[in-house]
Image (cartoon, rainbow, N blue to C red):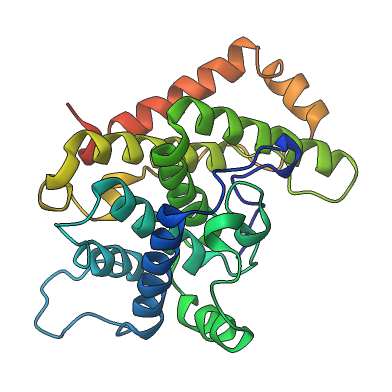
Amino acid sequence: MRLRGTLLLVALGTRGPGPGDTDAQLRDRIRAHVEVLCSRPRSAAPESPDPGSPLDLCLAALAARVDPAGDPALELEAVFWALAYFLDTRDRLPSQPLTANVLEGLETPVQRAARHRAAAGVTLEGRQDLAVHFFAAAALTLRLGPRATSRMALAKELADAQALDRGTGTGFSFADLCAGEAGIRLGVRVKELGAGWTATLPWRMQDLMPGVAGLEEGLTSSALEAEFGGVQGARFQSRMRRIQERVAACNAYRD
């Protein structure tokens, strides 16, 4: 099971808001949500007719914990960051510039080991990296907006391609971009729904994230240029439209 670099790109050199009351409240909510995920039952109740995947159960558990009297934006961001953090078993998110304020130092080493054990087997299409990309993109969209998040997702993949050129990275991944695009769409959608988001949005990953079969991965910079003409190439733009069409076809995002 691969876990690629997170959606966030250190090289951007951008930092999120400084610590304050809002981030302190957000950290408290994230910490509480992660504790719930770590102590959750590993399976649904026997009487559940269609419990869904382990990730579906995690998502539903946190959606049920949202405080209806709380700040909707903070509540949403806390849910998405908690899921991304829970599944980040390579522990890369806390060290990223945009997330250090809210994710760094949330747990002790003992708690970290327990989280890693609890997250085992919680995947999206058999991979944790896709789920981390998805939920981090949703959280960042609420914090920074969809355009900034989309630019960071692309910049991160280009950096991965350059790293693979040097023999140290995982390469450019259209599958990662698909997960990021779906997360962005989720962030936009729940912001539109406002306070009623938990009652109206389907909380199954199959409704929120399309499959990534057939999307190219592990591309070096030269392969991206040769096969797709770089990011400005016609084939690259065609692949991005294909990703956007897949995401738009998900039940949660249909108009």
